[in-house]
Amino acid sequence: MAWTKRTTPITPPPEDTPKSDVTAVESDAPAAEKAPASRRFSKRGTRRGQHGTNAVLGLFVLLFAVIGMIATVVGGFRTVQKLRDTSHLSEEMYYTLLPLMQYTPTAFDSVEQADQAPLIQAALYHVTNREWIRQQQDVNYVSPYTTDEFGRTIVPIEAVTEAYHALFGEEFTPQYATFGVEGDSYFAFEYEEEKQHYHVPQQSSGAFEPVIGTIQRAGDFYTVQVGYVHLQDVTVDDYGNKVIDMEKATYRQYYTVKRTEDGYVIRAVADETAATDKK
Image 1 (tube, rainbow, N blue to C red):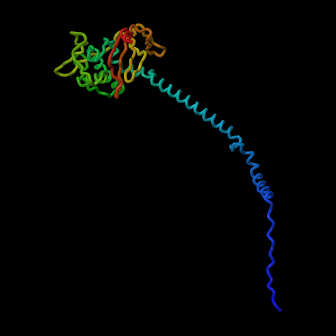
Image 2: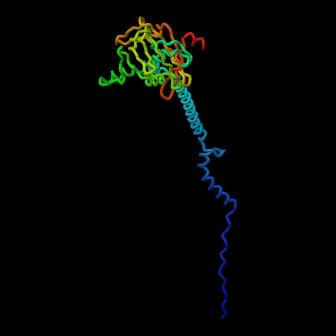
């Protein structure tokens, strides 16, 4: 019996899905996925509500910018105001100028051209007043300066020169000479060139009390108004303190003061009329 070769039955291929149906299926899936996106994004592709958020952020940025600008302007104004404010210098200027202004000096444009007598007298006061303060602070303090037979304090020239430079500047050389009441050993500021010292009598203030007025600053230079009030116009408050009113000043002067690394030095003194004319 002959064998007959059987062939494996061929399974027919599956029928292809119509393209129209595939397209429909494929289009349906993305449509379902895109549905939520269509609610979050606009047609231009931007997130819905983004314009409102940007507007709020922009408003905050603008607000902080305005606040920053205002703060800068206010800070700058306060800085300029602080630089121009010299009210805190009144007391400092008073004690800086006191050695000279208590003697109501003659006006001068420069230290070299000034009458040296009041300048030397101011330097001597600077020395003797410092000693008086030390004695008040310490009852056991012993002054290095002796006195002569007339009760005048003997001050070495080195100390006078140091005080002179502190008041008027180190670049100036004082011109020493005897001044004061001639022929009166008790009240004369006697200069002994050979011994290089001064005989300084007890110093007293004049008929006027000085008072500080306006202070104007230009760089390192200050123009300080000084009024001279007659003693009869000086009153006393309820605490016993002197009340010196600028409005009662008999006349006024303007001191030109320069600020240095060590403090202040006097450069010139002008009478009020002359100072007004220069302006």
